[in-house]
Image 1: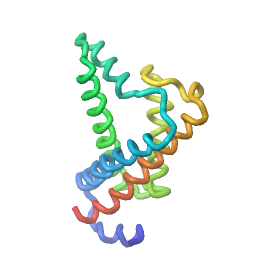
Image 2 (image 1 turned 180 degrees about the vertical axis):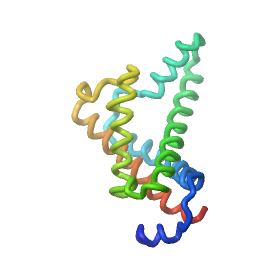
Image 3 (image 1 turned 90 degrees about the vertical axis):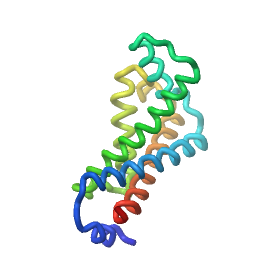
Length: 160
């Protein structure tokens, strides 16, 4: 079904339905991104584990290795759900946000996180410190995330 036909199926805009469809897409895309990262060259950093360590030091409670893994997984899945929900909400009212079938979203998300927020927090190295292979691997995994988020969102939204 083409995008235009799917837009016709969704006759009424709904922020809640858009966000729910996006969240489902984001969770599915988290699976795809994780698999893509396993297939691509290994990254040298794990921002979720670093963030878990920073959180534990800020609150003054040392986390066990198992607790750090739980926090890291929660951050990983939570980020996918929240990013997908935000995307779904925006896509509901601004269909242009779905450009390139979600690839634009994936690249924007990579830029916002890996070029902005995470380096500013000291959780990952700045892009210029990453190798070409690491930068390419990161870009590909985020494009996969964006494409899958949009694909699932587009399938789920008319059914809500």
